[in-house]
Length: 400
Image (cartoon, rainbow, N blue to C red; front, side, top):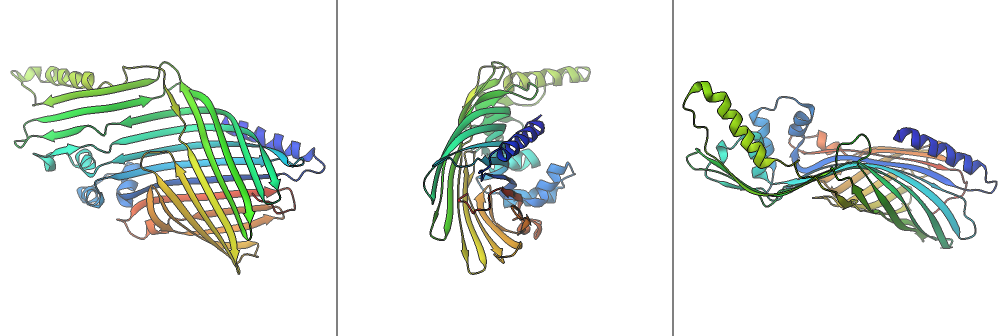
């Protein structure tokens, strides 16, 4: 459905562009996809994600690499934008985005408990702070207008509907887990909140989204600042909204007759399910979208193209992601790109890319800044793919 809508929008925009004799519009598509963690090893992640057997050595190698506060995140940001011809100082534009993102934070001891069991934590209280997860899958359609007060500055703003396909949020950072010294009892202090949109087909929530930006040229520098995902969404009354503050204490099973073993286990499991039931509380949910701030500055130095970017997303554990790209040779139709990044959900990484002018007015860029993840099995997981396609119907250079 989304692909069909996107194709229809693209055809409509191109038809509108052809209908304007003096039009000098531009169209571009941008995509950034990333799975990263600053501490979780690549070997463990690949085995876990692929459903392979994970041996004890791999598990403990992963545990030893973790710190007190760890994070793992995924995001897929896909955006298209069409800027119509300018009429005097004003020019309309439309944009569409399709975004998926997951961000989580977790402590070392909780990871150790889940993947190695509680035998190594006997007599120790495991604090679950931070234990947060937030998940989004949504699309936006924006219509707006740009204002150009002079030849080197463009200010733009727009708004439109937002459609959410799935949403989830978990925060149990105030919880703790304790195994007695004699290992004959386990207690769980559960305190936190759980939210999830109802799993209706396709659409789970609707709302609005807005964006505001400014772009310009100062000397030899082209720059742009964009604030997007400024919006709010509402979910239906069947969505889950649970809050828990409970103490669970388990001392084992008391069996008088082995013939009653199955019934005893069932009773204990039913009690746990009752205590941990998170899907029984339904209520109307509403939430702000995960905001996104993006800034970019580009220039040329001799025969090199230089680009500095900063990205911030409102997700748990996400820190400003700084990117720095070097392209060479600047005047060539095909350029080699060396992308570098730091932050987001990972640390420093470097890679390779290519930028090509595949037609007179069409430029394509593809970068993979993830080479360090393949150099060492114990290196943190980092898989990144960044691409951009720009179609300049105008022959003039523009300020974005």
